[in-house]
Length: 296
Image 1 (cartoon, rainbow, N blue to C red):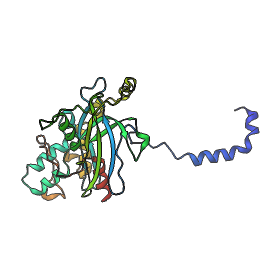
Image 2 (cartoon, rainbow, N blue to C red):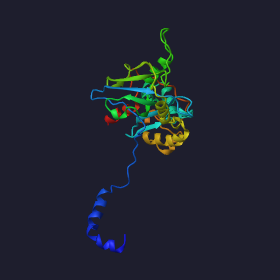
Image 3 (cartoon, helix red, strand yellow):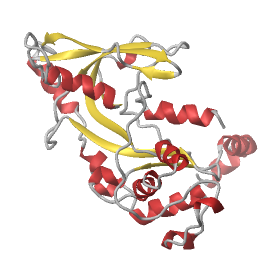
């Protein structure tokens, strides 16, 4: 501003400075919410309903879904370990190796800890939200949808029907796919998707221009399995040691015995076996983590 303007506006300078100071709350906080992700909404009773349409693979993607594993548990320090597993990209992972050691120890207590720290499987696909009564603004939009094995099993069931009177359906197909009616119930404190089902086959839209528009909005799924988006073995091991309350030197294999610590600890061993989830267990990992955090 010019000197004349400085003199003319000096009466407002204090108010302007005070206003600027009160609105300055430091650096903007980074949001960790992925706006591309759609999540079903449930009511206070834990029930929910929506209709979605699974979409085909984007250009450059081999499949219309990707899968990855992660771990989520609280250590004896009270800190959380919530990290993607390197086994998702075919590499050794410190938690999987730790779980193998615990599982093979022959100690039932060790097995219980391995179960608590087991891998959790996730699938990610593109969807079109057809009906979302709780959030109608989402309808007609393309999102990413992360889901668990139970929903994936329902997808496989329609692609590989078990009975002779059922024709296989490709639910990811624009023209001969099927809408998925997502029905969520609260069963013993966990989300249950057993009532969810596919509708009859139908064309997503009779308008080819609309289909092409939707196809152009589909997200690339390769990022979910890109090694660049995974922490290194060393970084994960360091985090694991911190959560378990181990010193840096323990990472070299100098772990105390099971009798000397509150919980068994990590050693590098063979890849962990897959540990089956209990019947009716929650598919949605974020709900699982939130449930555990509420117990703090």
